[in-house]
Length: 162
Image 1 (cartoon, rainbow, N blue to C red):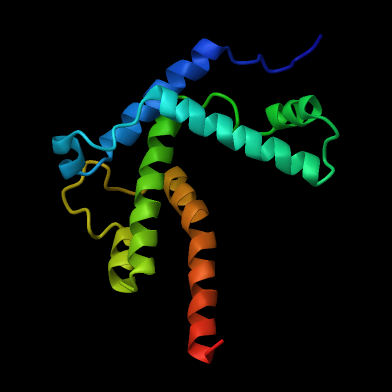
Image 2: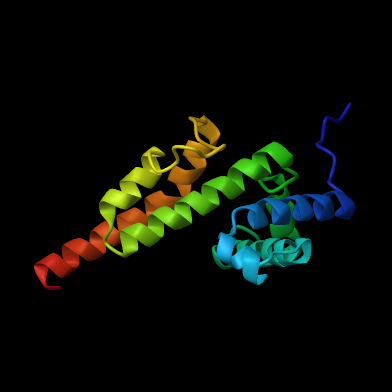
């Protein structure tokens, strides 16, 4: 008896792409919404997903982890986090993505106190999303940790004059 996980259908991915687009649109700035700018569609999300898949496939072949595109795709399909996620996790991922972008922007501008406030959630007194959620915190941390490390290295190099 085989207990393989079923492969998601194109319709299931399409539905999740629409859900992710709705979530991403939910976090657009008010000015973008009023001016009708920056709206994301399910097709935009599908293209983004396809580009990530293509990038991962090329990386696996270049690193010698797979010999063919088909072999790489089979290995990618087995990895965690690349299948269907469900509405709740998609909502958390998009919230974390938005917060990580806000934090990275403040760090890039040198506004460390504001970045800290965003990270701690103290800038969200009346937000319905306010509150501790371990999944959101892990996703935010996963998104901003490499960026902050890069900025610290840049800061040290600039301080040393190199």
